[in-house]
Amino acid sequence: MLFQVGGDGTRPTFFEMAAAQQLPASLRAALTYSLGVFALRRSFLHKILDYEDEFYAALMLVLEGHSLRTTDASFAESLYGLRRKSARLRLRKGSGEEEVQHSGLEKRQRILSVVFLVVLPYFKSKLHAIYNKEREARLRESLWGMVDQGFDEADFFTGEEPVVSRGDSGNQEVSVRVQLATKIKKFISVCYPWIHASSEGLSFSYQLLYLLDATRFYSLGLQALGIQVCRATGQELMDTSSRISKIRNHERERLRGPPWLKTVQGALLTCSYAVLDYAQTGLIAAVFIFKMMEWWYQSAEERLTAPTVYPPPPPPPAPKVAKEGIPLPPDSSLCALCLQKRANPSVVTVSGFVFCYACVFKYVTKYKRCPVTLIPASVDQIRRLFHDT
Image 1 (tube, rainbow, N blue to C red):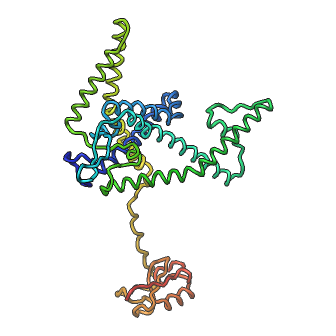
Image 2: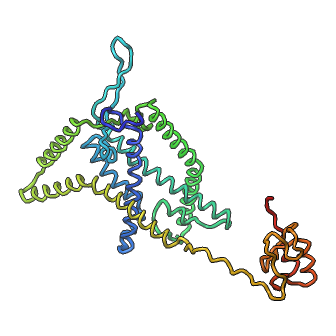
Image 3: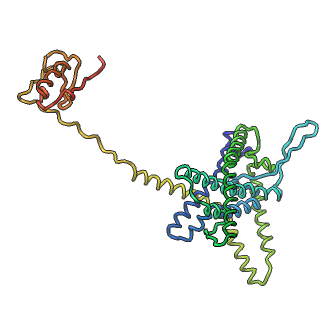
């Protein structure tokens, strides 16, 4: 099942489910990046970025609700040709074996699917933000000591500017709000890591079991709702198209009012249908453009910040032999001082010539120079050479 890529089976592969699960995160990153770029020229877009979680949750609420109502699949699953079906276990007569029967989604399952796809990720994102803020506050406190953050903690939940109350009742109200906010934050900072670890552990367990074909449910949420994700057949795709047409025709028939108002309402419905129909293609194109721009700017930044690689410098010229210096023997393995094969070879660092250690040590101690080039040297500039014989 792991390598199944065709359409023969109705059970999606692990890679299809993983891709469908990761698509919303990539979509959010693309939208956030695009809004951040546009906000550089249009300052009012910063307000949307300030409420990024709410904006993305509202967008996904529209997309997921429309997709589940028309295709019985989430927004990401519909892009991969997947469908959600209600799974019920029934015993076969005579054999006693369990048989899975699929049917269309019920209204309750659609609503709960929206809760699992939109509402729960929204609250998880907010809890993660509160946990990170509390962790940073504790880090600052450990580094810089206690900091008075009463108004910041109280205003975190209200979203209002801090106002100093003049009366005693106002001060008491603020102190109560600060204490409540502090207790909530401490409770979240203690409980959230365990909640997050448990959620990730359950998710990993279900994914591993799904990969090993030990369960038909990719996540705990799908099993709790009694929903299985299956590949859509050609007939189901045709039925989906006809159902969408019926739903839209029924909505047009429900329009009320004078002819001109019906015309305006019909035009608005047509525009909304067009936006929803091309939302999938447009958002996928946005993700593709985001990834392409990320790669482009990352490559350009790497080229700008990469250190310049210069070619290695040429070796310095060989030191010249002084006329008054000791001449070099024709055999390079001999010492120029004793004309014997070098014993304990040592180099004079100021010139690079090699001699016997005892010979060059005595010469440099006495004359304070290199025997060949006559460059001033000291015994500290003699280095022993060690090599394999």
